[in-house]
Length: 413
Image (cartoon, one colour):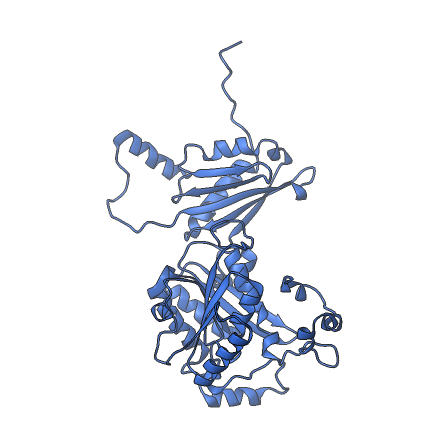
């Protein structure tokens, strides 16, 4: 199946697409516009974003789709259509799902949809109780999962739902077709996602990405404040825009150290800087001559600094790993002290070991001019923003004006 992202990059001739796809045609209105009142037409962007989250935080460090990666997702409150698991399985052949719902009718309809699409071996539905944990891996028979996906109830009460609908001067442009159990919950969507956060703090790395959609931008602010208060240091945000009016938002958080790309993680325009995750990409300019001896400069940069690294000459790319800041003057002094005394310079207090800092440095000769070469430093894994900032400064100081140290002359004439 073709990548569905092509439907969203530019203006689309929906009428032509409808002629090519009978399945797509049923979502088209007589005026040639897509019918965003159909819930199945507005769910795809969320799935695509989760694909991007997983693709840019895999252990291959390629920022690309790995067709061999097996992925397990949990759809919390799957609804009668079971739409997220159906879409996920349609576009990724190695994906499978557990899908939960607290409503008996939704559960039965979801089962029928799974069977109708012959996906019973890849999607397992579960009927749960309102008092059950939202992410009960033991009940699902799973040791770990790769992500959660959730479109939580928006409203805190039926009266809030009714007043919200009455406040709209025009009919909504996107669907709001759920049963009451899908639309209303104590505390609304914020309380629901905060409940997810509490559970995630117990499960931590048993799930790579906890995610949820939100119907209000104000909810994004509140939930992100809750995440930061809980000590979460790795998160991502996204705005989904359908048509000209309909907007939804999503948040994701992780207790693992893999960092998504900047465009995937920082996807809400205008969000206050304090609520955005730290950028995982740093770019600077260097002279084109760096391309000729990039490997030699990296040797000078990393050798004898407790940094493991490898290099691909074809792509002018280096990948590396380090246990924290091992390049600063303080780190070098600590190494000298250890070599001289056999002891580390610290206070003797045991501390949790930080995940290793992982990076990629890449030159872009295809963008080079006669005077400028672009250098990218990509933060691939780690939780300490200070370490990444320090590393970027260290690399830029050495490569933006590269000078190789003079090598001693051979004693042989």
